[in-house]
Length: 260
View (cartoon, one colour):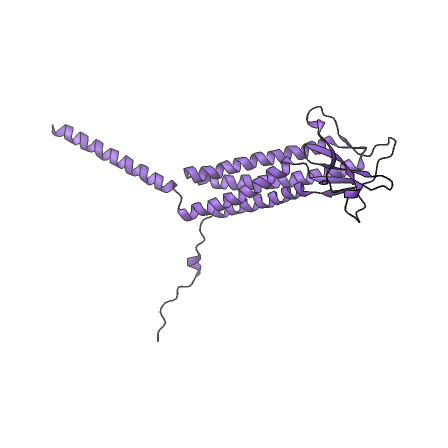
């Protein structure tokens, strides 16, 4: 009888030790309110960058191409394009601001014709104002931008796991993902700039001659630049949170009571 009582007491002690060990492990994985607040602020900053990135990649106002206004004509032509499609517009010259020599801006009301780039499907180059795109450069800019969005989504998932599961080791992974996504977006912007330069130089020899053009980068590209900078800033904030606390107290001289 004594043997059975000892057995049950040992089993009860083992269960209590296991429960205490689980509680200690859960306490180690729980974030302090101060640290959780800092991570949430960093996630909010990164969410702003993510919103700007999606807005930039999904819209087609990266660059505007404007023809010069001609005398004796009531309309003029302009175009705007992004990573996925282009839009040409016929605008009334009366709506164009006075003192402007070129047609535009593209946001003015007019007859629009928007088409998606065919080099994503059939591999054909697009023609805009008797100029031909260089599909390899445009395709590279789009692919790099999509990779940036994918890495950014992975970073958001890592930070959410940190907040929900207490897996702080994912904090560094999320910081790397956000930093890499910001760099990829910057690379995509630079590649797109080269695509615009290639478009302006690839002029057709057909008659009538190609019209003279001017170009201006528009608000979608500005959103892309802002998204890159905000994502890099968010990555820096998360990296700072992964660093150990600097022992400022050891650097400060402890002052004792002065003798009078």
